[in-house]
Amino acid sequence: MGNVKPRRKRTVSPVVRALARCAAGALFLLNPNLDVVDLVPDALGYLLIVSGLKMLEPVSPSIEEARNRFSMLLRISVIRIVSLPVRMSVGYNEKTFILIFTLAFAVLETMYLLPAFHYLYDGTSYLALRHGQSAAKTKAPRIISGVFAVGRAVLNVLPELKYLPSQQYYSEFEGPVVAYERIKLAQLSHMLLLVNLVFTVLLSTVWVIRFRLYLRRLRKDPVFDRSLAAELAEQPRDMGLELLGKMKPAFTLISLAMFAGLDFYADGFNLVPDFLPALLLLAAAFYLYRANECKRSLPTVASIYAVLTAALGIYNYIFASKHYALATLNRPDALRMQFVHTVLASVCSLVFAVLMFMFCMTLVGVTNRHAGLFAEPEFRTTNLKTQRQRLRVRNLIWTCFALTILAEAMQVVYGALVIKHAILWIPAAAITVALGALTASTLGNLYYQIELRHGKVL
Image 1 (tube, rainbow, N blue to C red):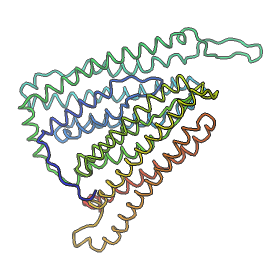
Image 2 (cartoon, rainbow, N blue to C red; image 1 turned 30 degrees about the vertical axis):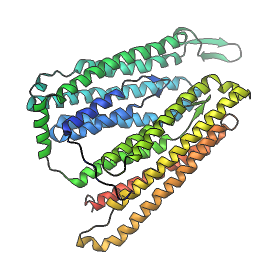
Image 3 (tube, rainbow, N blue to C red; image 1 turned 45 degrees about the vertical axis):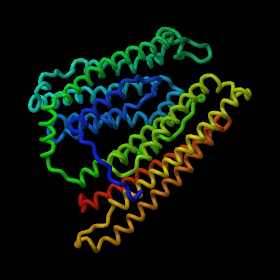
Image 4 (tube, rainbow, N blue to C red; image 1 turned 180 degrees about the vertical axis):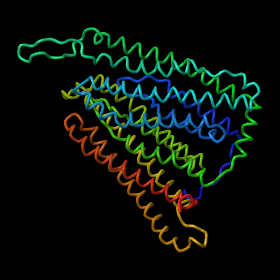
C-alpha cells in the first residue's frame, strides 16, 4: 500500500463538486424513523452536506455559519445512533421514555436545521447575485425547507404518541395504576405509523426535488461556475491543511464505525444493524480513495461488505418477526432459519476482517508517508523521538486489528447463542466499546503526527 500510483484527476469544478455533495446529502434525509430507528442514517447526509459546504465557506460567511449548523446536526445524529441501545433498554421497562427521547431529539434537530437552511440560502443567494447570470434569478426554496424541518420532526414524534398513558384505573390490590391500555391513541398505533410513513416520504420527496432542482440550476449556470471557481482558486492554499481536511472525516468515520459495531438483540431483532458501520466504513474508504491514499480495491470491498450487511439486516428482520419465537421453543424449521442467519453473519464477519486488514494496511501507508520525520535541519534532533512515536502508532493500528477480530468473533458468538445466553451481550459490548475507544485514540494520535509532519503543531 506504500506505492499508491497517482490517478489522473478529473477536471470537475470545485463548485460543481460542492453542490453535488449537498444534493447527494439531501437524499439521506428522505427516510422516516421507525420505532426510533433511523433506517438510512441522517448522519451520512449531514456529512456530505458539511463536506460540500466546507469547499465554499472561504468565500461566504453565511455558508460558514450554515456549515457550523450542519456540523452540529451531524453530531446530534451520531449521538442518536450511538445512544440507541441505551434508549431501547431504558424504554423497554418504561415506554414513555421512548416518547421523551424522540421528542427531545426532534426539537433539538429542528432548532439547528431551521437556521442551517436560512444561512445556506443566504449564502448561495449572495454568491448567485455576485457571480451568476441565470443563477441570480433562481429563488431559494425557503418555505418548503422550513415546512420540511418542522414537519419531519412532528411526523417522527407522531408514532410514539401511542406510549402516552391512556387510562388510570383503580386496582383493589395495587391502588391507582397508570396502564398502557389499547384505547384512544394506542388503538391507532398502526394508523399513526402509516401516517408517519406516507406523509414523511411525501414531504421529504417534495423538499428533495425542490432542493436538488435549486442546486442544479446553480450548477448549470456556466458564468456562476467559472466566476466562483476562479475566486476559490485565488484563495491561499495550504497543502498540509488540505491533507488534514481529507484525513479528519475518514478517521472520524472509522472510529464511529467501530463503536457502531455493537450488536444489541431484542426479541431477535438487531437494533444496531451491521449495515450502519458498513456505510460508515464505505464513506471512509471513499474519502481515503479521493485523497489518493488507497487503491480502488478498498472501496470495492467496502461496497461488497455493505451489500452483505444489508442482506443480513433484511434476513434478520424476517427471522425475528416470523421465526424467533418458534426458535425459542426449539422448533426444527425455526432452528434451521437461525442456523442460516448465523452462517450469513459469519460470512459478513469474514469479509469484515478482510476489509479491516485493508484499512490497517492503508493507515500504515498513511503513517509511513505523512507522520512525523521532519526534513528540515532544525528538527533533526527530534527525528528519533518522532520515529519512536510513529512506530508506536503503527503498533497500535495492528493492536486495533487484533481487537477487531476478537470483537467480531464475540459478536458472532453472541448472535448465535442469543436465545439461551443473552448475557453474552455484556462481554461483547465491553470488547466493542474498548475497540472503539482504542481506535479513536490511535487515529487521534495519527492525526496529531500528520499535523506535526506538516508543521501545524510545533
